[in-house]
Image 1 (tube, rainbow, N blue to C red):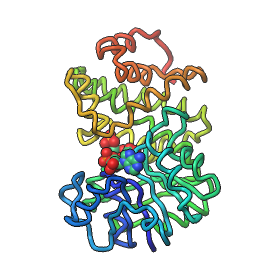
Image 2: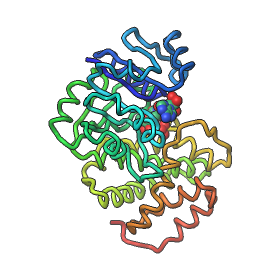
Image 3: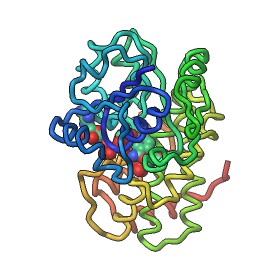
Image 4: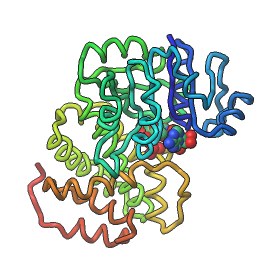
Length: 321
Ligand SMILES: NC(=O)C1=CN([C@@H]2O[C@H](COP(=O)(O)OP(=O)(O)OC[C@H]3O[C@@H](n4cnc5c(N)ncnc54)[C@H](O)[C@@H]3O)[C@@H](O)[C@H]2O)C=CC1
Ligand SMILES: O=C(CO)COP(=O)(O)O
C-alpha cells in the first residue's frame, strides 16, 4: 500500500520511518528547500539519528504525494491543521484521513479528530494517538497507540493496515475521548514541568497528574467522551508519559516557566494554545478545571508560578471524587 503523511516534522517523519517497513510512504511538507535537503541527505533535522530509506519519498508536491495513496495521515501542528487541510482536501480521493496531532483549536474549540471531520466532511476519518515520542517510534522502540474511528469496522481495517512489528495499534470507537485525552494531557504536562522547575517536588507533581486526570475526565465526559477511553493509552497512558519525561516539549516548556527561563518560541508546544482554547469553553459549560485555568494564566503571562500555586492550594477543601 501507499501511505501519504502530511507534515514533515518530528512526528510525521517518525511515522514515515515506522510505516516504511510495510508500505511505500510519501512524506509531504510545505517548506521546499528543507524538503529538498531531506530528500537528498536522507536525514531529518528533527530526528538526526534516523536515515530515511528508499521507499520514503520526501516532497513538497501535494498532488504527487496524494496521487494513488491508500491512507492519508496528518501530523501538521493542530493550530495549522484546519487551514492546511482546507487547501489539500480538494486533492483527496475518498481515502481514510487519520489525524495524529494533539490539541484544541483556538478558533473553533475543536480537537484533532473533530477538526478533520469539519474539513473532510465527505470522507472517512480517524485519530492515531497515545504515548509515543517521535524518536522512540523512529528508533523502532516498542510503542502502543490508540487508533480511533467512529465506525469500529473502519478502525479494525486501518489497524490491520497500519500496525507494524514495533507499532502496536489498539482500536477505539470513541474518537472524541481519544482527541480530548491527547490534547488535555499536554496542559497538565506544562503544569508538571512548572512544578518541578520551581522546586515544588515530586509529590506535588503526582498530585497534579491525578487531579489533572480528574479534570480531563470532567471535561471530556461533558463533551461526549466515554470515561474508559480516558483510562486508556490516549488518556492515562499519554498523561503518564508526558508529565514525567524531560523528552516532552510541553514538560520542557513548563520546566522553563518554573525556573523563570526563556523558551524557544519555534518549538511546538501544543499545550500552550490548548490551555487558552479551553478557557472560554470550560467557563461557558461551567466545568471546574483549576489546573487548566492556572496553566492558561501562566501561558498568557497573567500569573506567576507562585500565584498559580497559591490559587490552587487556597481552593475550598472538598471530597476527592
Ligand atoms: N514529536 C512527538 O513526539 C509527537 C508529536 N505529536 C503531535 O504531532 C504534531 C506535530 O508535531 P511534531 O511533528 O513533533 O512538530 P515539529 O515541530 O517537529 O514539526 C511540525 C512540522 O509541521 C510543519 N508545519 C507547520 N505548519 C504547517 C502547515 N500549515 N502546513 C504544513 N506543514 C506545516 C512544520 O514546517 C514542521 O515541519 C503535534 O500535534 C504533536 O502534538 C504526537 C505524538 C508525538
Ligand atoms: O505527545 C507526545 C508524547 O506522546 C509528545 O509530547 P510533546 O509534544 O510534549 O513533546
